[in-house]
Figure 1 (cartoon, one colour):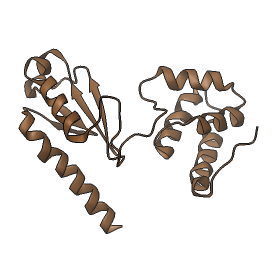
Figure 2 (cartoon, helix red, strand yellow):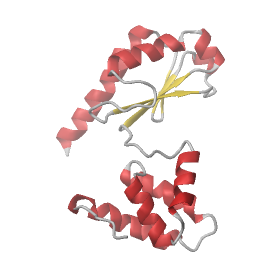
Figure 3 (cartoon, one colour):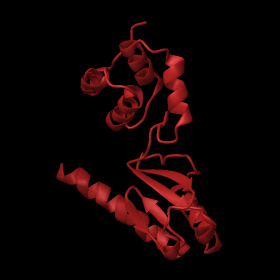
Figure 4 (cartoon, rainbow, N blue to C red):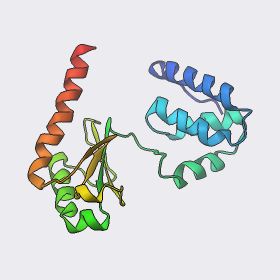
Length: 170
């Protein structure tokens, strides 16, 4: 089966070919290839999974089984910023549910969804080990703690502003 590669995807598939070539002989290479593929494409759509399946001569069911099993893989586009709301005991007791509800309202998305502008993806997480800062959210690698619902709009605005500044400097 021939995979139709759009003009705007050619560079990404060339990078994917390089990754497959680099790792295909390594033991346990499939996870690494999938991780690198997700870094390139931002997620692992069926087209990318099929491409990898054909290149490595591995059944698509095996690849999709791995992608759907591991939480680190996504079959849906993810936002530039992933917001993780800690719902561990300490955070929950200190108001994490209200923080989560505020973020959902501000971004008009639910847990597991990505905002229309593809800027934010919202996830509910278990304890992240920052209990002394409860309630806590992470936005990519940044940790924000001791939050109240009133803090959320300004935190989100900071990332929106950063995104807009990055777009104008390119």
